[in-house]
Image 1 (tube, rainbow, N blue to C red):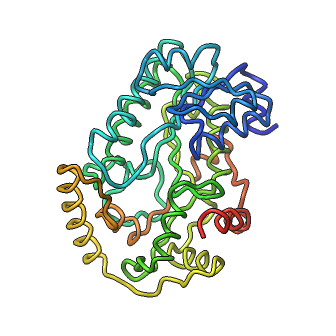
Image 2 (cartoon, rainbow, N blue to C red):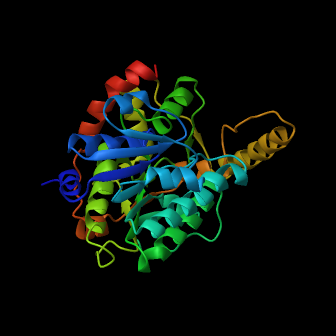
Amino acid sequence: MGAAEDISAQVDRVLVTGGGGFVGRAVVNRLLEAGTAVTVLGRHRYDDLAERGVRLVTGDIADSDAVHSAVEGVDLVFHTAAKAGVFGTHEMYFHPNVLGAECVLNVCQERELPLVYTSTPSVVFNGEDILGAGEELPHAERFLCNYAETKSYAEKRILAAADRIPVCAIRPHLIWGPGDPHLLPRLIAAGKGGRLRIIGDGSNLVDISYIDNVAEVHLCAGAKLLAGKGSVANGHAYFIGQKEPVNLWRWLNDLFIALDIPPVQRHISFASARRIGAVLEAGCNLLNRLGVQREPGMTCFVAEQFARSHWFSHAAAERDLGYHELVSTEEGLRRTLPWLREHCL
């Protein structure tokens, strides 16, 4: 029995916040395939999900009334909703990522519902290479973007509730696959426009996470939390990625070649990229305060992400959650290329 089927056998209904998003929709799809009734809480109405029998609640995740409505008849909650990104004001991220997470957590505590939280490895990024470390890594003390800072705060708040309800956090790194709204489409657009440069010497290794594997580890976590506060997963965070890290620039260039996009060959030093990022961020912040919305083409956070190695041990997820990679990197690329050719070229 798989994780989705295990959940279906134990619960009547599951709530997925952000169920119309990339990760949320993947979790919803797996639950529906296993025959589980699903409620989705999101900012928009998703008619395609309604047609498949999903109960839709449209509202703000920081609105207690909306969240209370969404948890009616629910036995397990996946909180995938968040604002992602590498640039923007603190308020833009604080409302959904902190106030929203606190609201969902509070309602789950009132109803004594297990909660799986979608976090990010960005909570531990400290400006240094990370080479196979695990969950013993502490949260960073300084953050280069408001996304990472707000997700760190929310993860700490949620995991601190482990003495009251079963909770855990999943930290998938660089999620990709068919339907990807962020990572690969942005990189492809930059590659087509000749705007990409290899930052540093191009030897950095990173974790990447195929979307089906990300959904699977969420379901494994949910199935474990149904055992209650005594669950081995309760109160813990888990890194997740493909079985092996990839050389970021080699993997990206192989992808570009498969899409008939010229590979990235020009280099820029990390120090130069970081200085450019700082200048562009300052300029865009000034423009935004003047009412002109701009997003910088480079930020300090992106410079570090593209220059440093950051890959993690996945042993804890395998040991505690029973997680195993479903889709290899090679198979994931084979599934993703047709979608990219249709939507990004």
